[in-house]
Amino acid sequence: MSGVMLRDKIEEQNRLWTRMQEIQRVAQDESRDWTAEERTNWDAANTKIDEVSADIERLEKMLTLESVDHDQILERANPGKPSGDKSEDTDEAREVQYTEAFGRWLRGGMDYCTVDQRQLMHQKAAQGEQRLYQGITTPSLGGYLVPDGFRNTMTETLKAFGGLINFANVISTSTGNPLSWPTNDDTGNVGAILDENTIIPETNVTFGTKAVGAYTYTSKLVRVSLQLLQDNVFNLDSWLPRKLGERIGRAVADDLVNGTGTGEPTGALPTSTEGATGTYANFIDYDSNLGYNMMIDLEHSIDPAYRALGDTRYIFNDTTLKHIRKFTDTTLRPLWVPVPVPGMAATVNGLPYSIDQAMPSPAAVAGTKPIMFGNFNAGYLVRQALDVQAVRLTERYADYLQVGFFGFMRLDAVPDDTSAYKHLNFSA
Figure 1 (cartoon, rainbow, N blue to C red):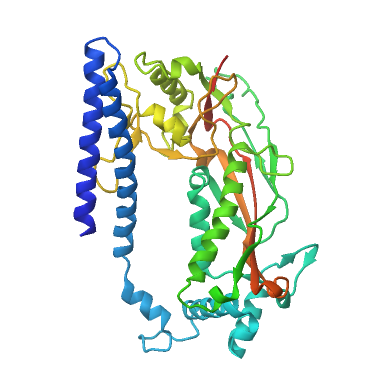
Figure 2 (figure 1 turned 90 degrees about the horizontal axis):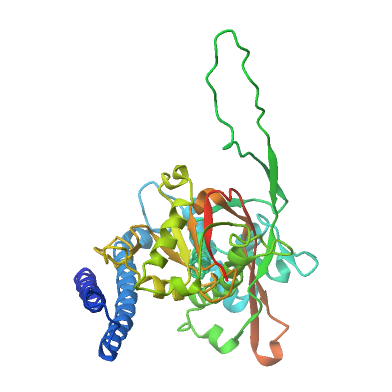
């Protein structure tokens, strides 16, 4: 059923897009501005295509969920039942047991857990560093590593708020100590033809160094009433990680794009180099093709060696996409192409793009950088230290019949190779 609905939505999206192209083509062929009726029809189709695009994303996620092997999940969730040569001592079974214990701890604290579950929680806590206030906590103060399902929900929510983190080079480390690595830029050196009986010339390889630390991001406090905690209808196990992930995601997404590097990660945009330039007025002059020319210049400002890696993409916010969807090339071919078939993403000039709302919107202000383009896996490094942790505060809000929760994670980011990505800059 989902597959049929997805096909119908894609067909509807393409019909709308064809209609929008036709309105634009007629006005350009007749060398005139759009009529009021044409603007109204185009805006209506544009609004509808946003709704259809959102429906397509939902249906694609539904198809992914429908493809999950639910029998296998049930088997893992019931490790006590016969399942071939598997036993309750496997890592998968212990993770299921820990997830159940963690859920009981969220709702009622340690008093709500069995003796075995308390022991499992303490063992898991001993595996990770526990930080609270000025020092290291003990499990009795409420800090515990989150189980995989909780962490995955939180991480996916975090990624949904920032397009850049999905395509950067993300590494995980078991400590938060400063991490250094050597760097080298040898692109300016080339080999040479050697004449007979001539000594080989020397050109040394020079090395630099970069370091990345680990800033602590917190979700701030979330208070939940005891009534909700005791109500099994309230799905705390999915609601809480989503909220914690949203809060941390908003903070991380902005820093990865715009961070100054002082007391926060070094953002990709402030440290990137200019790949193309233009003016805001020309960018939004949809009939002149100047915006299209800026994007072509930006693409070719990246060395072909990076483009050949196959991971190059655009990053901009949704307002910029709204403008780009009105662009055409010199043959009136739209730059933005909607989803052609299930499994294929929409493209800009045949290349993938990602929406990151931390990117600035186009504006008539000198120095505005609305678009980045390049290979961000090669050019930008994100370091996640240790594991996501959650803290439960039972006594602090007892007189309100509430329990406080907060999560925290440690993360830093730095540019690794700024030749791999560049930005479009608006001049005065």
